[in-house]
Length: 126
Image 1 (cartoon, one colour):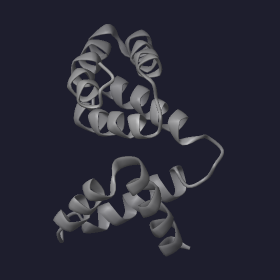
Image 2 (cartoon, helix red, strand yellow):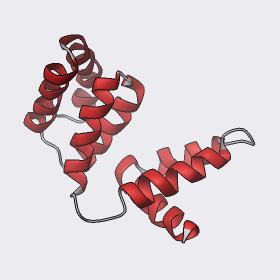
Image 3 (cartoon, one colour):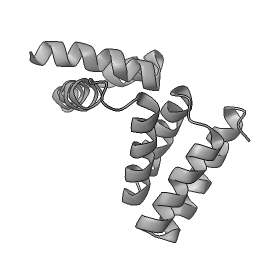
């Protein structure tokens, strides 16, 4: 079962974040964090993203809201790229940031807008 979750997670993770990005992370894993990379791939991506109860775009927007409130901007940017891959529009991304500002505080929202701008330009959405 655990190996099945890893394989399913690896497939989902690559589909959302890009195969090259995921492979770079796995290749860079060493004795310190390799078990974490494998567990995170199985748990987050295999178990968490592995069912079809919530579509990938909605999961991406949920992640943007949660990571934004937590102030995890590097991960937020990674998941913003994933949200774009999953079809999130500029309006949907903006709405997710508004939710961050409302429920997590205006400074969190300001940081999300700041972090979003270069990625949205790169993706041709701005």
